[in-house]
Length: 291
Image (cartoon, rainbow, N blue to C red; front, side, top):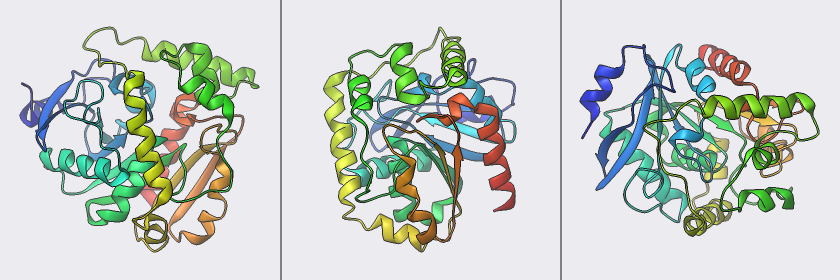
């Protein structure tokens, strides 16, 4: 089984996101599947609902990896990882902690997309000393939020299998020709990897995500309040039309969270890093450089 030693050997900077092999490491009694791209300060990315190693846009990962070691992984019980996905937001955050500790990461940049953003925020509110910066993409703040998801999101997100048309609705802006074009290009980049693939998430696992999301919304951990007083610099990247986590929910938070910055991408949906991979990577690089 490949492990942390293999990861260190891989960090020559030569492998792209499409080429880099899947590695495994034991963490908390589970075998966690992960991949690493590039060299530099580590960036650990928490994935979306139904997200696996193969659902990240490789161009976005490669752009981040120009100056950082980018680490993606499958949650326990998801994709190629063993175990079970916890049904609380804190439970998933604790699994991420075990994973990063297994990788011997004492300090790193933590990012999260969608459901992964809820995990990342919970992690930041409980284990703030472990992370230097928090990157949030297409997600909600903890607790109750005024603007609910759109029904069209659920209509596509809960299908047993998603196709390009679903992805356009879920992650892009169907009303924008340029966004639809970007969706096709992103899906084509993702499809370039044809070997050493992870395993798609099946509907029997959806409820575990839902319970974690409900736990995040209940916010019994007071993450919303804790992050309002954190010293961790927070970058929030949102599309102007996100059908699952509307950007409007962030408007009151950027006034309350003292270290937060909000960037809104026009004519974009739930996955701005897939529609604008180079631009989002540049925003992140600038944020990390100056914050």
